[in-house]
Amino acid sequence: MYRETEIAEDTRARMLAWRRDIHAHPETAFEEHRTANIVAQALGLMDISVHRGLGGTGVVGSLKNGEGPSIALRADLDALNMQELGNHEHKSTCNGKMHGCGHDGHTAMLLGAAEHLSRHKPFKGTVHFVFQPAEENEGGGRKMVEEGLFDLFPADAVYGMHNFPGVPRGQFMIRAGTMTAYLDTFEIRVTGKGCHGAMPETGIDSVVIAAQLVNALQTIVSRRTSATESAVVSVTQIHGGDTWNVVPENVVLRGTVRTLDAAIQDNVEAMMGQICAGVAQTNGAKIELDYRRGYPGVVNTPGETAAAVAAAASLVGSEQVNTDIKPAMGSEDFAFMLQERPGAYIGIGAGEGENPPPLHNPYYDFNDAILPLGAAYWVALVKQQLAA
Ligand SMILES: [Zn+2]
Ligand SMILES: [Zn+2]
Image (cartoon, rainbow, N blue to C red; front, side, top):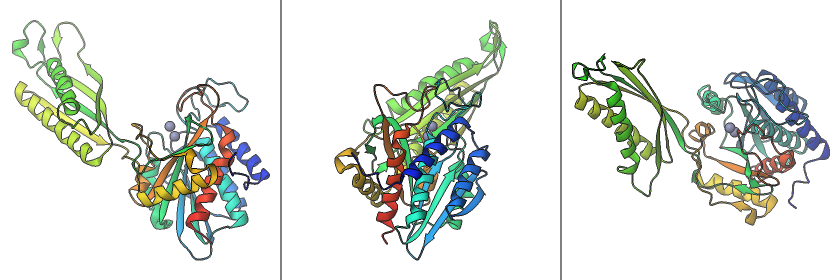
């Protein structure tokens, strides 16, 4: 068994109540008003100074205990637009919305840590508890950073945590360097020359051009990226044409790009531009590429990764902290905070029993059994980094 026992019984009970209350009332991107109210009220009762409205519905609590370093700990508030199919007592009361990623649990664990730290103050310095909106799609983390998160709340380092149902409870997982992928999307608009389907020589066939593009884009990864590097280029939509005998003037392609390295990301974007220009010229068509950068990669800095590993190991033993996981191709907007400050993002195992539902599954429910361990991780990290 691991050391989570310093989290008091009443705090554990409150974490469970917060978690289930938030789960039953899921709110999505930038609409987390009720959830933010719960967080702000709870922090207020702990005598933690509360700042609201950063990044829309974001909440930051600051707890100062004398002079010393400062640290930011981040949780996320938002749910997903999906229908919950599980049938537990605290299931979603909001049709079409669900806490399918466990952000309800992340919020409860950080509140639990805040309660413990405000009660015992086992540190010297300042702890900022950052509750961000809109992690899932809309970059609430970026918005908080843009609105001056680290100017208002200067922090030497920033830390994040996510539950992983595929990893057994009692384990942590992390890696130094890139932990999650850079996520980009693109739209390619092909303009040919519409004409009669029986007389293609009188037009410029945007459908054939779209097919050439799909094929050529595959060579970015297969022929032009080193086998030791990685990238994903997926065309996921093709839209064009209305009937059998008209060659359409326009076709639109859309898709996504994932990379694990900023230089590879730059290369992929440049190669896409090249291919679009080349295919356009070959066919005498017009091709416009709209390449949109989404979430950057979560890149853990070495010193803070070591700090996170040490804090986790102090609870579960170093053999239960996997420091050599593969980077995940998923994405996480905590990355925007890591672009501003050194820090580390850690995975906490939440797996229980045979084949627990994965994140974003309609039967997923945050595993309440890890609430005390998650809170204890935050407490251990603060005690270690802000040693009194
Ligand atoms: Zn998610
Ligand atoms: Zn998540």
